[in-house]
Structure formats: C-alpha cells, structure tokens
Image 1: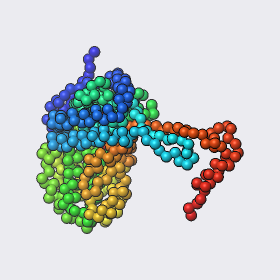
Image 2: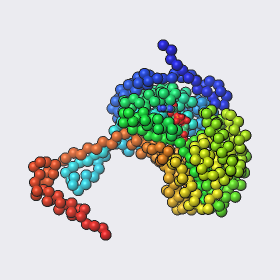
Image 3: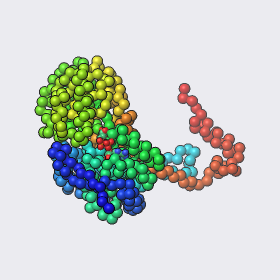
Image 4: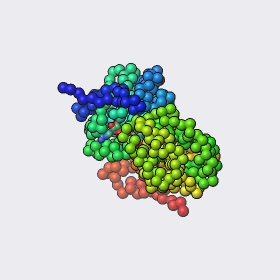
Length: 490
Ligand code: NAD
C-alpha cells in the first residue's frame, strides 16, 4: 500500500522543506485510539508529576530553540528572530500552564451556603480525555501551544493536526515531547490537509476540539463536531483596530502601530489592520507613521506571504481601498509575489473590503475621527472582535475605551502585550470565535468541573428531600428563607 504524501515548501524560495504523510481517517482513528489509552495513564500520573514532565518538556524546547526557530523560518518564511520570539512566548505559556494547573484545577472546598450547613461541598476540574488541536501556519509554535500546553497541563492527551503549510514544526513539537514523556504517546501529531482535521473533529472519542484558523473553516469544524456534540474552542480571524487618542505619545503610537500591522507580513490574527486617529493629532501622527514606514521592507523587516492564495485577497483589498482612499505608502505595485511591501491607505470607506474583511497582509487603513468616542464606535462596527489597541496618556480614559472595545483583548500603549502575559485569557467574540486559551480560563477550557456534595450529618427535622417530609418542616423552611431572602432593598 502506498501512503500519499505532501510537501511543505519554503514560501520565499519554493524549495521543499519536508515531505509528510497525508493521514486519512484510519490513521487518525488509530492515533486517537492510542491517545485514549495514553490519556488514562497521563491522568493517573497526577498533577505533581505532570508538572515535572511539562517543565522538562519546556527545557527540551528551550534547548532546541535555535533549530526549531530555523525550521519555523523555513516553513513560514518569517525571519529567524521573529521565529525565536514566537517560541520564547510559547515557552512562557508552557511554564505557566505547568506551574498553575494544580492551583487552578485542583480540588477545593466551596461554601455550601446556609441551607447546606450539613454538606461538605468540593469542586475540582477533571481531564476530558483526548483533546484534538487543529492549528494554523502563521505562528506554528505559539498558537497551537496555547491549546496544547494548557490541555496537557489539565491532564489530557493531545492529537495535533498542524497546518499543511507547517507540518514539520508540528511533527517536531511532538517528537521533542517524547524526550520528557517516553512511556505513552500523550502528545501525537497527525499530518495532512483539511480532511485530516475533519477526521479528527468527527471522531467521537475526541472530547474537545481546539481549533485555530479562519472563521469559514471554524464553521465546518463546528458542523463536524455537532454530530457527536463535541465541544470546541474557536480561535478565528480578526480585523483589529488601533485607536490614537488626542493625548497619545505619537512617536510610540506610530512605532507600535507599524510593527503591529507589518510584522510577520501582517499575517497575525491580532495584527493591526484598521487605525482610527482623532482629528486633533491626525496630521502629526501620519507624519510619524510615514517617517518610519520607509525603513520597513519586505524581505528584510519581514518575510514573504506564506500562503500563496492570500496574494489575491491582499491585492483585491488594496485595489478596492485605493478606489476612493488616498495612498500614503505603497499601492498595487507593492504586491510582488511572494513579497508584499507595506501599504498604507487613508480615508478608505468603512464598507470597503479593506476595512471589513481580514486582509492578513502588511496593509493598513487609517481614518480620521472626530474624537475617541467615534473611533470606538467605528472600531466596534466589525463582525470580528478579537483584540485591539488604545494609545492615550490618560490611564482612566484608556481603560474605559479598552473596556468598551468589543473584543476579547485590548492592549494599552503597546501592541499585543496581552499575548505575552500567560495569566490573561486569549480569544475573541463574534466572527473571531469563542472559548479561551491561556490563563486560568484556558486551563478550565480543557477540563470538566466536577461538583461533589457530601452530607456530613443529618439535620433533625429538616429532611427536605424525602417523601416523609411534613408540613412542619416546610413551614420551618419558609421561615428560614423569609429571614434570609425576604427583605427588599428599596
Ligand atoms: P485555515 O482555516 O485555512 O486552516 C486552519 C486549520 O484547519 C489547518 O490545519 C487546516 O488544515 C485545517 N482544516 C481545513 N479544513 C478543515 C476541515 N474541514 N476540518 C478540519 N480542519 C480543517 O486557517 P489558516 O490559513 O491556516 O490560518 C489563518 C487564519 O487563522 C487567519 O484567519 C487567522 O486570523 C487565524 N488565526 C487565529 C488565531 C487566534 O488565536 N484567534 C491565531 C492564529 C491564526
């Protein structure tokens, strides 16, 4: 029998980086079967030993930082420095998940309340079993590790389906894990195209799917999950806004905005795509932006567009934007496959695809607003709701704008700083998805709450859950409830 394979390519050169099997339903099913057995062993191992093993895995990844960054560079085209930064972020998350799992998920007593004086109430978060992780290519270590590390720390086994553009990185992550956990295949990688992911999502023994990718694919994955009522986390795309208020540090804002938009060639789910600048500082901000953008170059500051199919989308967005917008930098000629030079267009109508749809390229639309309130309204007028940025020197005002931004995360006076804080949950609303990775919420996402109520003694004359309950007990209950809850506050 011949196994079909596919190649991963270096997007800058077209050279073959590696060849990997297209694993079909049978291979995926076998991996899930092995994972089920491994999940039982891993759960039995206990929180303390899992912590030790995961911290060891963290050390193994750290020791392999350079070769892993080189592989990320080859498969995505991003500069080695950016790949290194991405892996360092993943390491900090792995560390946090390992160290905090017992505290967040471990058994604890909770107050039983007045009516439960004779009850000992305990809560703990137990592993789900097998978790399927389906990942994208843009941050092939950091993004899936946000699910993998937290799922493993919560006591689950993981079957990971990396993007077909970055299978080598996915395979390497699981290989490195065996150095720390050689006994059972607690973390496996299956390779292939969309069908491989579909087989994983449709397997009834998978107890949760953590999907990261486009909104359109998330809907297909959700449909596959529906057949078995498999819950899922959906980490999808974004159209993140960047608000510059009148009192912002304009140099810092322009610097952060440019990096947020252009780094990784704009192929960042929480990348800056739309900028709203209050009128009072519009001109000076644009001067700062223009001053800096000339030094940013495709092929030097950032790599190529990783997914060839994205070129046409980027091109269409630029063409639509310049129909009525004014070019600040770049233009259609900026698109020179596989690279795209920075493109900034101002005054683009809000209904343009460049403002409404995820571009996923090194492009920015900038718009002048009356005030920060209008900037916020425009920022929120999006089907997406992943993250965003506010620049203002007034902490109270910035906090207020951040809270009112309809997104899962907002950074103030910095870009994407939330991603580097492991204690903060990461995820979106609306078309950006649902569920959370990272932080305590990210650990609980991969566990089921288990509630136990243990009666410590019988309360004489208060046996309410019995057919022997009499009118007298009911009257006593009404007196207690009236005393506790019967007084109005107004
Ligand atoms: P994609 O949706 O094309 O693919 C994602 C994964 O799903 C891949 O592994 C793919 O093979 C798999 N897949 C495809 N069809 C499938 C199916 N029918 N069933 C199951 N799996 C299937 O996304 P992409 O191009 O790899 O990634 C880019 C997108 O990811 C962007 O929209 C970006 O914003 C988003 N993203 C989001 C986050 C986040 O945390 N919110 C992080 C990174 C990327």
